[in-house]
Length: 182
Ligand SMILES: [Mg+2]
Image (cartoon, rainbow, N blue to C red; front, side, top):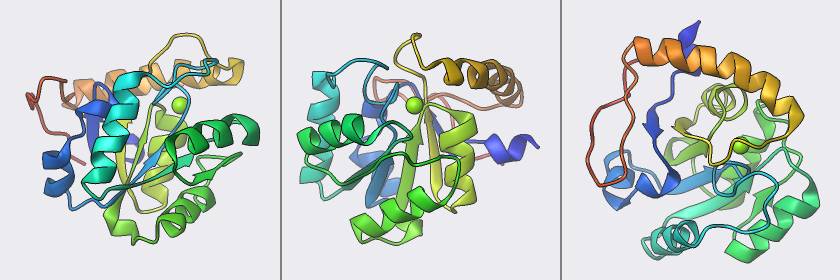
């Protein structure tokens, strides 16, 4: 059962994903979750280091698409700010929005990774859609009430995954583990 939730990579934050890791996994596109992945929930701003990270990888030729369960208004605002396409009200973990994201970037599923902070929406959905799944630790503890219930389950699942050997990649270029075990 745990296999459904096993991320291909587990990163402390999105900015840990650099050109080297992208090359290693032959990735050309990234589907980004919004809340608590690139922006603390309920906040309007995207942290400066995240914006810089997006720009840097875009220069490197990486495409992005925002895929979020949040409202059209919220998702569009961030997507326009970053200059990337988006799918709002995505109903993750359903596959459709992820596949739409792949299409919007004009890439093949094998070239795309999903990055998100939730096992029950981002990770299981990415895996069901046949995409590489990258888990990040959530940015803020404040969140949507519905998410809190998922979190309860997710903290249990994450504890089990860590017990089974899931490793987190740290920020200072140090790869302290590998999460390829399935
Ligand atoms: Mg999220």
